[in-house]
Image (cartoon, rainbow, N blue to C red; front, side, top):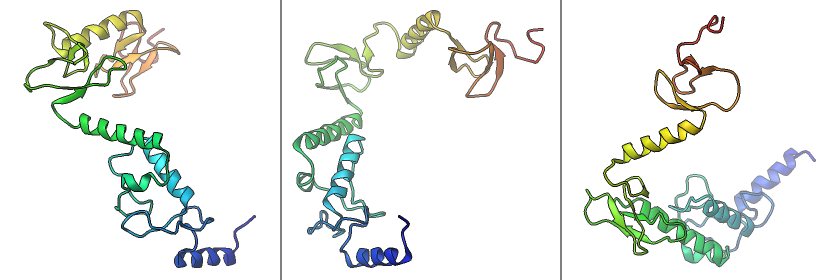
Length: 208
């Protein structure tokens, strides 16, 4: 059903008067403002806003849905709209962000451990979790005694490339994996065109 000018005028008036939610333009707003800004939206829209923010990991600062408004939701207010399991997810994501932003803290790489590992010496790469797991703080992988992170990953890449259709672009050296198509390749990074078999520059008579 088309929205008439009369209906638009009614919705605009209702929005200005605060008797309709400015997100869905259907439900009446919640009686109580949910932040210090006094903007009001319907319960379902507030709930959807919180669920979307948390499930997508946008927890650094969950603010009012009003465009440009920086008023933040408190945990106390969130509890009025979402279940405890979502609050728990919010707190976990929040903690994860905090740890990630600490230069000398990280999480154990052992699956299902989740313990926080802190290094005392900033130059030290080898760390050990309370669970006994030893790993590299810099590259967050198994500890590689006698090898730099670059050397370790280069070796792993070469082993992977041997068993897979992976080669480096002759011009920019970016890794390229071939899974379909002919041997005429175009690098997605530098746009260099080359032959997959001999890695020389491709031209129209290359296979002639």
